Length: 345
Image (cartoon, rainbow, N blue to C red; front, side, top):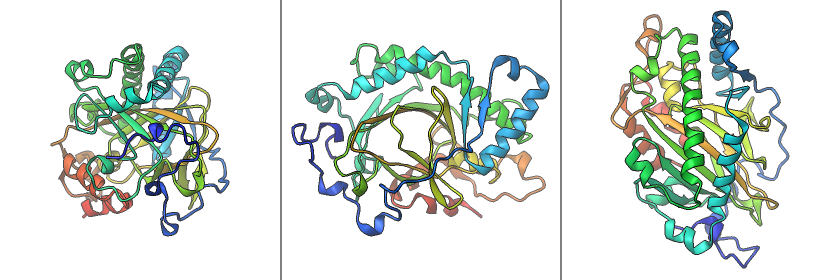
């Protein structure tokens, strides 16, 4: 496995490994190209007074489904998560990747466990990677107290601040899933009762400054394999979404959270909702950090469209185990768009 990108040749500012350089045919659009601003992503307000109002809740439910079917992504503002919770989580995440080089190398953990610290992608961890990306990632398991107890102990506030963020986002996710269920005319607590959001993890992505940002990327074009992702974006821009046959730059409002539809939500909704295709570009001026809360089914969960949605429309997808999809995603990391059609009827 490659060393962490943030620890590569600390004293050589322009060091750029050949494995990070994308070949011309792997770059469908120049990464340095100025892309238009994605300024039409709907902003959702989920204040308690609004959420508890039956009329507003029904309106929000319909709007959430419409937005997730058209965009695959929505921006949540007025979410009632205190600013300090978001600020502390972002600060400690940046502090983690600013730990001394030797300490980070000692923590580097490619194996599945309480946490994973690796560079580029999971394909790098499994030895199947053919191209390296300008990214480091820390995944923190949330499924049990035993996993949490195995997290890195540095920085000192990592547990407190990331867990505080996780608890708040977990509660927000429950509201969003409830809105989506209502909007799809599914029964109350559909996702929880089917254990479709049982597995959860925090992923902290770090995109160090890159001397040649036009020759590589932080993450290639892809869609998330899980159910739902809720992300806090750092100060530097870099997230782009594929919309209307072009890339658009996503610039969230301050302390807003981005909700991204994953492939499993697309399956459950029988194709009504769609997973957002997105990528991350890097820059030469400043590092970028994002914190994401990923939720999804347990590994052996059988995935299928919701029965309520196949009474008038035939199911578009086959029944499959979630871990089958995950491994297909890892094995075909160069072309994630081709994965879901393999599970379609």
